[in-house]
Image 1 (cartoon, helix red, strand yellow):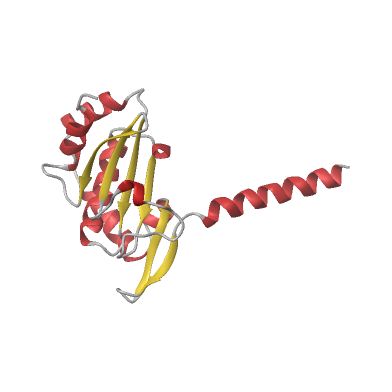
Image 2 (cartoon, helix red, strand yellow):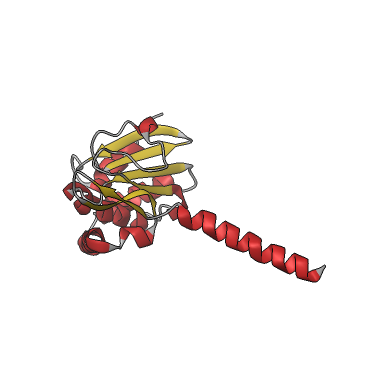
Length: 175
């Protein structure tokens, strides 16, 4: 009986690992670009790989968000149910510039990592397995802010002011 339980435990762990692993950092060959691009959900590993990872890391490390605005963002999100969907293309110059910077703002505001989804798209703004049509994305990157499950606002391509100021302006809007 113990052998069967042990074997079942191993099988369940391997099954769970396989399910979790297959959903992140996938690539497909983009015919328009004639190269492999990230598609679907991305985690830290995907954001830091290849040439996109160089841009991501550089922008994250060098961006200096305005502390007073970050404090205001932090105060608004504390204890609230916010989620962020970050849709980007690893081939896109605006994504290379903005995604690392935006994550820096979120990290400094202590925005929970488990409340962020990074979704990579190909040049046709599609992924392999995720239906993103509900997000109505025309350009990337698109940073979508949700509060209590409802879209509160978005930043598309580049901020109007700064990422932290635009995020703050979205968050302070009345429902």
